[in-house]
Amino acid sequence: MELANKSIIITGAGTGVGKATALKLASEGAKVVINYNKSANDAEDVVRQIKEQGGAAFSFKADVAKEEEVIKMVSKTIELYGTVDGLVNNASITAQISMGDLNSVTDRIWNELFDVNVKGMFHCVKAVVPYMKQQESGVIINMGSVAGVTGIGSSIPYAATKSAIHAMTRSLAIALAPEIRVNAIAPGAVDTRWWAGNEEKMYKLAGNIPLKRISTPNDIAESIIFQMTQSSITGQTFIVDNGQTL
Image (cartoon, rainbow, N blue to C red; front, side, top):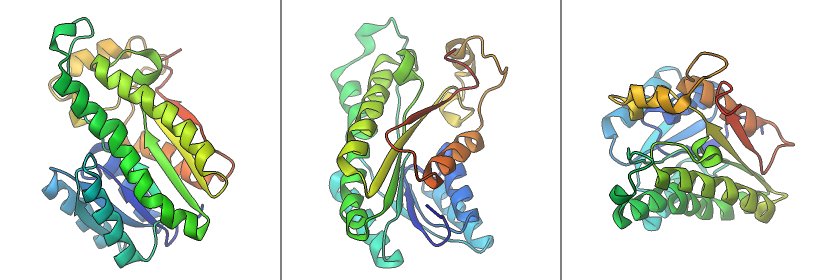
């Protein structure tokens, strides 16, 4: 897919990987939607940066765990941009719980993480698919994690949600072909505010990384751009981890 003048929604785009992806997409000429739930000021700052560079962007507050809010966001996108060509399902949450601390993994934590990380992504997919089907084209990128591959991460529920996303990506790629491509990115350790105050845990979980570096949000954004623009790729989860899982 060529990115110029394409309408693309990025969830959780006020900070981190979402922000980096939105800025890169806009620099390629895409019209972007900066979704946020709590980071209003950050989202508006991303919109400002894009517009200062001559790009098109608007922000929209929506909790992806609430389907009605997602539907309103997609409707606004259609109203302003006329179509939706791409979706970057980046919004996720986590819980910092020691892998061996089973007693701290409550039903509330399970529900919160699955509501946002899995069901929230599905809500977004479900909302954009009718428009993509109508125009017979579209690209969806889901944000997974190496935690969904190795089982090791910030918590057991987080790893479980990311594994579910990898499986859902394959299922959606089959269900939505040939008009819509669906892929996922599974980052290893990424230097974002998620790990602020927990850097020691991040490096411990990452282990002995062959490339001796931690990914930046821009590294992950570049992988997302690659998946968006390569027409022969669908149903794939790309591990981007500096060799962490070797």
